[in-house]
Image (cartoon, rainbow, N blue to C red; front, side, top):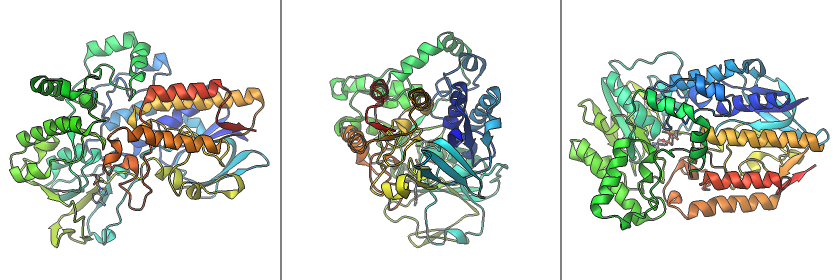
Length: 527
Ligand code: NA7
């Protein structure tokens, strides 16, 4: 029997494998893709790029690794991040314990042996003491069920399932549906090829310029001279990144109008997600938020020449309650004569027909459709396989009213199952690499502790998980996050229960996890 079976060989899965092996645990990983990389294996759409800076979006667990790897840009593009994941897999010889092109079908917990029986499509199966779901919070594509969707005569793409072979839009009329991060990154690149580009927008989005550039050699050398300190400082921020641009805790109304605009402008010029760190209350006070929102709307007006298009691009929701986008020439792209914006707020898309996309009775003729419609976030990839815990309890049934778990790590009724960056943990509200490393360390330390203590079963207690979900929602409730229809709340998927899933605040979460472990895994039942 394996000590652990890991599902997924993205950044969570490969580090889980590396650390388990280093601690003398027998581990195997299953991966649906043909190689490591997870998100960065699947999301190959034009313009795909990380919105966390390269020097931060990388592992810190091995000093030699972080010294030897060189990033070429401030924000790395998908091919380079994929090469990095492949490099890590080679460097630590991880591929020999990864079964590729195998998709988990289900798993069931056997009480007698206190172990998991995991099955894959095609009928193969494995037995393991622990099941580690390293399936990623944004890996289950959301392909909306639009009438006639499958009748379209031309090629159809989803940004999160992009083909491996090159896609050439030259001379084609292309539709992009959605205006989240994937759309904002791909639209300017697709526009360079397409003959016509029509963007279907349900909710206008706030986007801040990336100001991407080649990585500065002096900055790289400086960070590498004290990499551990650099990472530790980042891990002490709420979001586990961006300590180089410290958040100004001052409330926005304490600043004079000139100072306020100057602070926003400074961050706009720096570029990237740190824009919302300009003042301390932008995500907690809707009046304060309006100042930042209006600043961005003003930028949109200044860039987009056609006033009607600029108006349609103007977001109305609080800035930041949906993840802000980081772009290169997104708004500028709408000045190109062959790019059009179709507002579908209120109407939605009526139908997809062989020749195009119909909205409010009007057929927009296109040759190719790109769905940039996001993911069934946080729970989608956990609920796709049929996971059965003690007594045959299904995870889908257990989570009918939302993902009930403790620390985003463990579910009552599902002993010895851990979720890496599961709902209820900071995950997508942080630099994912930092959260991944913290979870992998915590989970593997727990397994080693169990081995030393002669325990063969661990699961969250019911009280602990109920109060944890309450805590996650209370923390979010003190902010503006729940005030719009974001995927954090599951609002982007029709019929999904509305529960705020990620936890805001990395340092407090780490403290809590450490305290739980120090108290002999308080809130967990051990067998
Ligand atoms: P997102 O951010 O969920 O964006 C998806 C976009 O697709 C968004 O504009 C949605 O509009 C739109 N959408 C979703 N369903 C539909 C339907 N049925 N009709 C029209 N438009 C629709 O996904 P991304 O892939 O861009 O980014 C996900 C994360 O990956 C991102 O936050 C980064 O962390 C990396 P809506 O806003 O729901 O009205």
